[in-house]
Image (cartoon, rainbow, N blue to C red; front, side):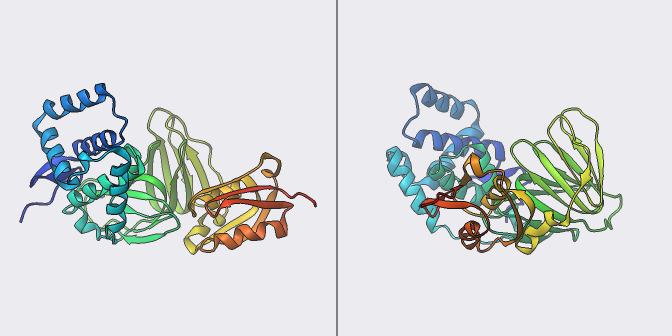
Length: 340
């Protein structure tokens, strides 16, 4: 039995290989199978393979698993990958098994990444230790007893060591109820995002990562918010929320418990602009959901079930002067109601 790989390692041809190299090989496969690779890109790919033995080994492993896809043209390759993706069986893997199954995970991601035309961020999401799809929520108990809930479309890596308990939030939103640390010495509990870190101070809290900022809302205890690139850290207390970019933290403000309604499968809106309301709904459904500027500032209040979004959308004209324009069930535009 081979030893478990380190958190940032996978296996290729029976030997450990750095995750970054595996990701590079997957990205090269995506580029070459797109049907649009330039001669300079093909030359760069060849140079990359020859620059280190691990690069060549990672590529041979990719070739073996993707089995014959290299001979297909771009569209045919994507169709083949799509078929392979649909046939892959997925399940919720216990965290303790993730390390030994990293090789399988990243090879599965090759097919999905090629199909979606994705680059680094989608691949990182697919390779995360815990992932939820759109509309899904998931509860996990971490090794120390901490309770973790992933919101829709979220991904997180679990990096526990002898000196710290670290979660890497790759995408989306998580709610954390930290367990009392029994081990000595004490290991701090951190959440790392693209913009900074959140240090728990005996806490129940949520962390949400969007494109431009990370937000935290504290239900119990406190959280120290520290941006990656300069700026002072700020302590957020119970009943407060804040957000940060990579350079600064916004002042803490009072937050309503409504912010955690998603844990009960609900979206709670209190005089929320329609634009923001639809943005929140879009986190839980596939496709495009938008509104015209003329109705974007209309206000909406209520409690809305996240597991029945079609009914929620169809009910909007009953409470607001709007109508729905549907091209397909996955493309919905809200516009001003037009009188006959």
